Length: 272
Length: 290
Image (cartoon, rainbow over all chains, first blue to last red):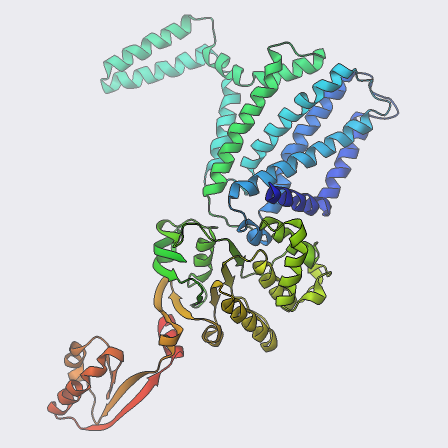
């Protein structure tokens, strides 16, 4: 734990004593001026929760990239070899980025309260799960976008799968049944009649069904995002929606574990 | 302390380390010598755990992997920090408690004669100071295994002597050190073992005592060209070298001196001169890098 804390302090010091760190602070202030103009005031609590939440997600992603890029420098070779596990180093990068993002988010949040909305105690208590879970997920995803963690084609796989999920949400049964029908024709030409018959039945079944199977499955993956936005707009979580932050944390855990595995097994070639 | 067995490391089509086997003895100072691109830095990075071997294994001869102090070849440091701040971070990562960190930093700086620069920003340090700082950070936390990539590179003779003295003191203190170098005198001065690498392969490895032991060669000069006898002479031993009217017998071939002389005389040639000379480490190195 001491080693991770030392690394976190070092990484945050390195960021905030650099021009990049000052730029982030400047961006936070500009964001506040643009979205929470102190001359007009912001009476709606929902706007406050959503806009600062979105800022947190964006800044978590960017800060993770920035800190990972700093951790990926050759100056850190002697530090890395001191750690018994590379995962400690990765954890330090991840937590540093989150701390920096939350600090900036709190800065904007504090500034926005000036002539901003009056938050009820209940709304204030809902802020941590609404803001933190997406931040953590954004930081875990950003690790995969960085040279620090990416190894070989890993970046293409992670973001390719994500793109497929996003694309798959809009796919209806006509597209899918057409695709299965093409497969069916291919197997028919190869003389694989049993496979072809099974695909033909599946394709017909889908054409006659009113339910978009793929879209519903993939829609479930992105449900927590919609649930959090709905809860933020409504000002309260339903019992089902209350699961959304936990599911986002589950996604973040999977992404972090994948990043840890990649980083622990890759050849470390820091930039000079 | 560390055993390297049949390790190979490739970077795309380049084989940086090719089936290398080495033992780094506990308490020894092993000098890795070789030209640029020989694979010295790659081997150090493999031992430091920064790179993974494609085949073979690197493992400690004891039960636990030793804590490692690593000084990379390039003198890169976080320039915004002060010398003591940087070393305190290294101490924190080496499980040195906060209370002991200050003492550990002081001792490391004193050992490399850098105490006067403790409060200086790293960006303001000279090359010599940075080289010393590289060595100081290695000492923090008292790791038993030190990996030093060209520790005295770019220093003036006085600075080099200081670094050599420091390495000798560390050796006397029982540290196991693996250091790379381009400089034969440096390696012969401070190392107990020598490994010559070239093109990713171990060309020569020996203890420094054995490596520096004089190894005589016999040189036989004749009155005529030895081309007609070349095949016959070389068939006697692979270490026999025939050049124009000279035969060179190296190392193991020394015992064949009588047979070589007999063959030359039987062929009707006159032996003009027979001489013995000693082979130096520099010649072994030159042969390795040719």
